[in-house]
Length: 183
Length: 95
Length: 139
Image (cartoon, chains in turn blue, yellow, cyan):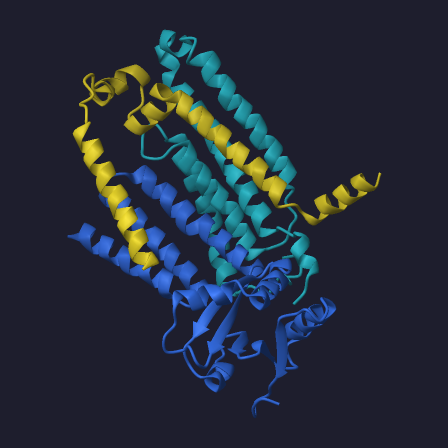
C-alpha cells in the first residue's frame, strides 16, 4: 500500500518536473522525486541504495543543476504568424526552423551560451507582445521575418548591430515597439 | 504523422526484443547467488552480504568503478577550465 | 560565483548547516567504518563526505579550496585501491590469515570512501566554480 502510494507520488512529481515552466521549480521537483525514490528503495529493503540515492540524487545533483541554471539561462522566442495560427503544420514549423533569420538568431545566442527555446504562439501579435513569457517576438508576414524590439533591451540592440554588420543580406527586419503599440 | 511513426517503431522494437529474449531464455544452472548467500559469512567475515560481494567476490568491479570515477573527473577538469587555467594556457601558447 | 558577496545568505541556512555539519561528518565516517556490519560502505559514506563540500559551498560560496590537492589525494587513494587487493586478496594472503579479514574489509572501505568523497567533492566544486569563456560575454 505504501509502495503503491510512493510510486504514484513519484509519477506525480516527475510529471510536475516536466510540465513546470519555471526551471528552478522543476529542479526542486526532481529533488523530491529522488527523495521518494530513496524511500522506495528503503521499502524494498535496499538501504545501501537508499543512502546513495538520497545523498547523490537530492543533494549533489540538485546543486549541480542549480549551478548550471545560474550559468545557462533559457531565452524564449515566440514565433507569430497571423495567417497560419489556427492550423499549424509540420511543414510550416520546419520552414521556420530552417529559415535564415532563425539561424542568425540562434547563432547570436549560441555565442553567448544561451539556450534558445522557440515557441509557436497561437495568440494575436498584440497579445504576444504584451506577454511576459516571451523574451523576443518574431513575426512572419509577406516580406519575411520581423523581430520586435524595444529600446530597453540591451541584448536586442546588440543583435541588431550584429545583423547590420553582416551586411544587407540579412533576413531579419527590426521593428521598434513600445507600450502604446508599434512605432 | 511523424510522432505516430516513431511511436510504432518504438513499440515494434519493444515487442520484438521481449519476444526474442523470452524465447531464448536459459536457466543458469550453477546458481552463484545461492553459494554466496550461504557461505559469505565464513568466507569473508562480513555480516553484510553486499559488502562481502563488493569487496571480496567481485573485487574487480569495485576497482574499475573507482577508476571510472577518476576518469570522469579528469574529463571534467579538461572541459571545465578555471580562470587561472585559461590564463596559464594563453601564456603557454604565447611562449 | 566570485562576485557573490559573502554574508548575503540567509541566517537560517547558515545556522542549520553549521549545526548539522559535525553530524554529517560523523554519519559519513560511521557509514564507512561499519560498512561490513550495517548497510553502507565505501561509496555511500564517501558520497556523504562529499555532501560536506556541498554544504560548505551553499553557506560560503568562495573558492578557497585547492581542488588540485584534493585530486592528487584522490589519485593516491586510487592507486592504493588498485594495489591493496592485488597484494592482499588475489595472492591469497587474506584467506591464509582469517583473523585479519575484518581489518581488510575496513581498510578497503576507508580507501574507497576517501577516494569517492574527494572525487565527488572535486567534481561538484569544479562545476560550481566553473568560470569559462562564457563569462566575458555579457547580455
